[in-house]
Length: 423
Image (cartoon, rainbow, N blue to C red; front, top):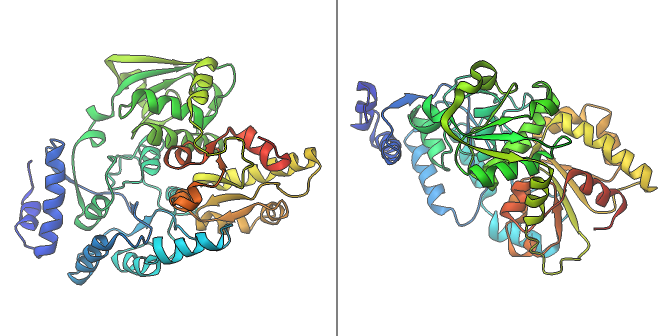
């Protein structure tokens, strides 16, 4: 790997032993992927995936302490993934014991470390850091050192920034050092499409289902999606929310770090089919294919006919536009069902900054009237323990379905269940 004089000096210890180890870590990481050089991180802010104070992460806390003690803190302020705890989210006495005393007992300690390392501000915890309200929106062509999969795929695809699917801690190393190894999605060639996905559905496909189908087929490759612009029109708030959810499903049900949508995403608008490699494979998605994918999802509840005890919406976190839209949808669903409040405990999750903006609108009081709980929590972190895993939880998030025991339903099915009940 070709290093600049500055990078070589850091590696040799010009900025101290700890910073030399940080640089060495990044160089070795890059060598694994045949990176040809280290390039500067240019994004205004960074983003870390490790936001949870798990008791088991003692080595991480020791590393953080060493970095702080040596002054090897991030030169770029950062946001982090959502917090795992919120007392407003329904939980049992036993769940609270597990959450507070066994799983996330180091949460306050870890958040203090993050602030010392360069957290943007004390509530900068969300998986959708790119939301306008949060303020960590990279520009076109910005080089990033992120690792949250749903944020990486959004930044690459919708914002045309450049970031690889890094691992936790590697994201922090890049922020501290200010350089990342150049390979994969940081290169022009690495952003070319190996798949053509032709959307031939008779109606607008469910974002989470479409993303799931694409992810499971192309895995880590880059797809060029045709036919979706018919349903999205332009890159407005509706389309951004749709692509956020679709992208999260491609990243979790597969390993997609970048997709192009003909006529919609920036690089596809500018370069068109020049982004497609000559030997690209073709995957056709019609109504039958989406149904096949939906029917293939396993239900791992012990009692498959159990009445849902909790519903999570917002994995990744919901946008302000989605919160407003879903407030109206829940109101209409309850009115049609003759109910005043949701019949299943339901949690909508969003970034703290988005929640603050939403609370300043008349919709906040209206949503509260429906009985829906608004939280900044990470649903995945809530579900990641044996007690929660045994609960019959429903969701319209394919990411949450993939990583936990939560059962997937489409948005319309979720709406019906929470407003009138029944599986």
